[in-house]
Length: 109
Length: 514
Image (cartoon, rainbow over all chains, first blue to last red; front, side, top):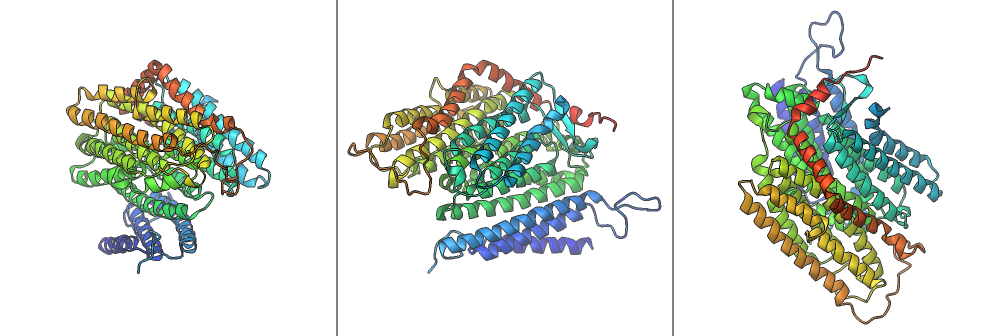
């Protein structure tokens, strides 16, 4: 499972980097979203992958999942959600004010 | 009471920001009073804390009584409080300038301003790496909106670049924080500093990578060489108040570099000690050169000041990059000077641009402006200040830096770069100033465009220039009390280079029983 998760994070990051280097705002927004997905998964995995073990102390638990990365990833998800909403509105505003969706605001023939 | 004082600079702007959202939009005087009260209370708190930590005490505050390293701690040491004081002073001046009318050209200016201060103060005080990320996001989100405040095509374009690059930066920050947590199992900075020395040998390479990723993030915030391209447009097109406040923003990056790479990756960090020593100084000197080349190539005054901000970051990080007590102390003296001077120049450039009608702040001969002599004199003083001509504070700052470089192995590089770029800064500013003030055409009084987007209230020129003069007085105060201040910065530097003091006061923090 570690290998699978690692590949997923890698592919998401690669897609994110590629898309955020594009010249139009929509792919850039998508790219940033992919990057935040990748990093959220990454943070979650940093507590090591465990199956069926509780994050809270209980009497009959043999093993525990690390609860901290889950809290971190929750914070990161909320923040990236807010940021994505903001950057979508900003790119719409940029589209309406510039008349095109190029990131540098210039028309390409 | 004093034990809770540490959290005051964080909670106060947050509460003020929420209150400002609730206040009725049309009641401008009330919102202005709330905002000003909050900023001046922060100033008073910073002053009080400065007095408290002056004896070398490190105040740690465990949030929710969770004992470190499990809970989040706020730590007020000399460096954090020094940054708080600089921020509060710049914020007060910027806010005074905004009261002329820019605060009313868009919704929620005051709320955003307070939230920006919330993020800045939190970033300086926090003792937890993930919490530092959260405060970075808070200050960035507020800064995105402040940057676009008032609207305009060029602002939107610069704002989009600023937002996108900072979002990528945030992602990198999370990757670095995640890696460090995965390897060391903690995010408390004091605890990280302990754990990094005990890290097993096979993890060292990954810790190295995480540390350098963090450096890339902080370098992006500080606008260090390859990552500075977002800054000139963002600072040049935004409103003067916001640009003045943003003069502190790059210093957050410099602060984080200083904090993380003296505490976690400092001299005591075993196999990852002095992680960025070989990177920081050369990059800082190159930043300085590029910044000064930018000031020479600028076509507008505000663009030129934005490049001066980059140059000052170069000088500052060169001082920190020497990694000696004298170097860090000199940098900490230079930091308030460069922040005040850049903020004042942004405000002054706005005063000049408002009077030049359609010419704005372009370097082209325009009409003779109102109060030409007064503004010209102020411009001259600030140009001398930021270039580092004696007897003003810039001279003392640069002198201290060069003095600290005397015993450094890279002396010729540091000395040569700082002195030669100083000369070119002088040339660039002299060219701009003479273009705007000496080569002004026919002595007709320029018509003030009342229909421009900046609503000009009937305030006198004194009210307009008060914030600029306040910042000038601060710079002069830096000269008059230079002895006391250098003593304080030397103490700060020695405290930073003894990270065990910080670690002890955080990890041995006694949590009071409920």
